[in-house]
Image (tube, rainbow, N blue to C red; front, side, top):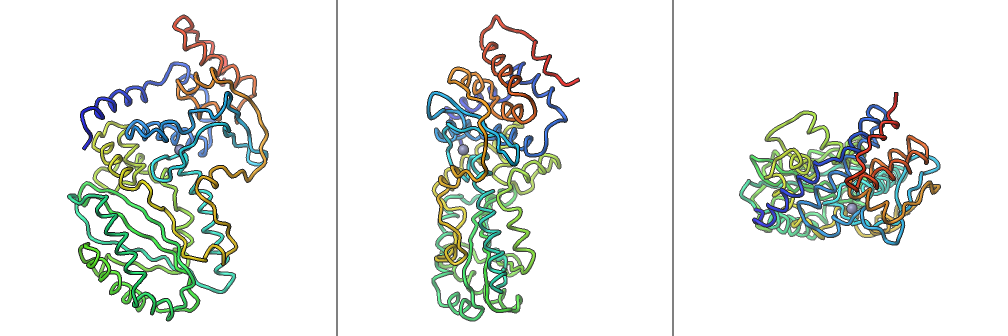
Length: 390
Ligand SMILES: [Zn+2]
């Protein structure tokens, strides 16, 4: 649970987050109906990043996309896609807690995994999606569950039973993804999805049976409860692996669907907890903090040794992936420190990028200048009206 200090600070931050300025509000109205899904997602992800920072008081997330690395920030537009982005800003690189960095990193990682699947098929191998779970309850501590899960996973891979399966089916490599959801009924549900690349065809029924025996033993020896035959192991072949990869890391999309459905009591992803916290669910904020602390330092995707090399995929850290520039872009505007601080103060970072994609440079500078002027109490001008689309 959160301490008193955290609660007070959260209440303050929640107030600040929801306090959109008049000028940003007017801008929102002016672009209403004109934005595409990626622009809407960016606006929401930037907002969720602010919420994550307010819950965790984590300096890295709090500074992400806000603090300049020099005296000025540049906003550029990709030549091909027309999408705008900033350079010259700190980024936190957290795949677990920052919706902005997470979506950028997982987009690149998704491409790597897709490339892996294509390469495997070219080599004549099959891909399988294996899901490994274990029983849990609402009283379980997440950190402790993760520790035991990690041990179970290691025991499972080290033991003779897995080595025999590797030989029998010609398992050439695996990619493991760690995920969790939370439900009010059953608590935290950390689970592992693994892509297996295999050389020889197999009977899924037989493999599932072998897998269950090996996985349930590993779970018991790691201090977890024995997984049920029905739910402990799932094996899917063919299109399921590709389908899973195409959706992997797109938590925000799922978060949005959750809001639309307004489900209560169902399983929630960590970013769904942020959305619910923003809507006033304080418990969701405490859960997100527990999750952030437990997942800190954990690896999200683990490729088995030598697999990337086999597929001709370069080894890159999350930081390198984040800083990588694939498409050529053209610098559109330079934002000096004082102007940038006005943008940050009004939480208008995403709106400036949207404006850069939809309007002229002149209009972007006008918007920034109005933000800066509105920092002074004597400038309550509504001249932003002129940007409204008629
Ligand atoms: Zn970040």
